[in-house]
Image (cartoon, rainbow, N blue to C red):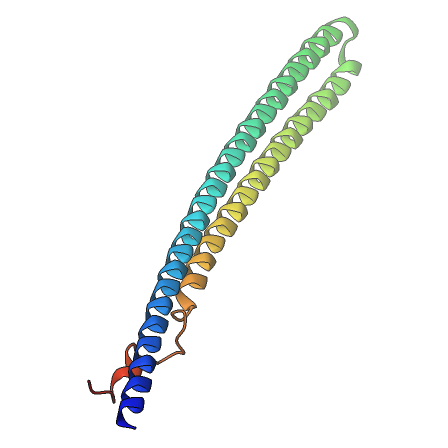
Length: 170
C-alpha cells in the first residue's frame, strides 16, 4: 500500500514538474511577445513622430512661401498703383489726387490682409503639428503603460512563484 502511495506521489511530482516547466516556457514566450509588441509600438511611434515633424516642416515651408509670394505680389501691385497714381496726378491734377490716396489706402489694406492671412496659415500649421506630436507622444506612453499593467502569465496578482512546493518533502 505504501508502495502505491509512493508511486502516486512520484507521478504527481513528475506531473507537477512538467506543468511548471510548461508554465515557465509559456511565460517566456509571453514575455518575448510582449517585448516584441513594445518594440513595434516604440518604432511605430517614432516613425509617426518623424512623419509628423516632416509634414509640419513642409506645411511651414509652404506657408512661408505663400506668405512671401503674397507679400511680393502686394508690393508689386502697390508700386504699380503708386506709379499710375503719380502719373495720373501729374496729368489730371488734384481731382485724381484723391483717387490716388484711395488707391494707396486700398493697397495698404490689401497688404495688411495678406500679412494677416499668412500669419493665420502659419499658426494653423503650427497648431496641427503640435497636435500631431502630442498624439504621437500619448500613443507611445499608452503603449508602454499597457505593457506594464499586465500581471505575469499564469499567476494571479500577488501570487508568488513556487508556492505549490512549500509543504512537500522528498
